[in-house]
Length: 477
Image (tube, rainbow, N blue to C red):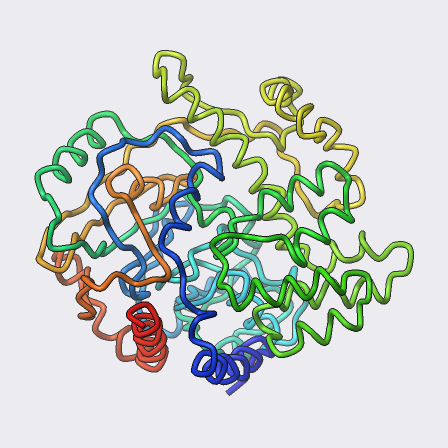
């Protein structure tokens, strides 16, 4: 089986962390009060004050995402068919449906790229899907063959419906996403309050906030990194990435960053501190490589070394600004326009909308600051709807939680809908009231079954369950 380096690093690191957790359990406990300020820190201050508690992403099976391709075709979570129908006269590109579990789209594509011996830009996708989830999306592959893709076997990934065609995917080349979710709830859950909120959403839609996943888990600092790039402060960026504090990061990792702060500037010493966790700190290590090799251009090269992440950081800052405006408008719905222009635009009117904040942040010359980083795309006039209306496919309340399925257009997110329905929590500590039962949400809603996928990803699901059990025991301790 072809193995991507990141996966082998992760396997090695997991064994190391298991030993560390056993010796220093206090460093792996999380204070639940650290969750309280996350939404405000990313610009969201206008949510309903009385929402029931709901725990999301307990299992990857609790968060299913299926891409709706550009012609309305749903890329389904399934293990088969392995091969699809090729267009005899349209060759040059191999298309495949990528089903993944427990890793981001970026990591999954990197594993495919490495397994085929390709460059990063030879494998394209339309959008990034959640990591703590089971997701399905289309990818296009240039520079390889149908036979090579058919034989490829990478961890946490299924490639199916593999066929030949022409062209390539680009970012945004999708209609939306279909979400099928299971939200775990406590025994005190009030189904009436939930039903009322659901009725409001069906009638009024939801304010189209960018949720916490947009800002980097677990630190939620991506917008801060983006601010430094757009301010032209690359030293500030490096310091923030390498050792910026976050109340939501495990104390174990926070202590490593404190040591990094003391060693900052001694790149070899920093590398040694990061070395035991080569997967968790893979972006930091890539940036260190670039700094050491780059001389005076080291900071610029460090950003180029993590292009995909840097692109997300800049967009997270733009999302932070959008959240602030949406929160302001949400307090007075009469002021809310139908659409909101986004910062990364060639339209000067869009920049004028954000100008007071840009000047306060020192980011008002951001186009100039982006010149060394041509990989960060500026759109002609990107905008988002200020409200979105989920297309509901099914809802069912059971003792363990709430099963819900809906479709959203592109540039809208499931967590945005959930934050209008629940006081949504995730990660550590895991609440004691959670029933750990594995739920087939599709079957529960009469929308299909996850049985075959559960069999295919049994190893990954068992590993995730084992890790959750360890987290629960630490919380109880």
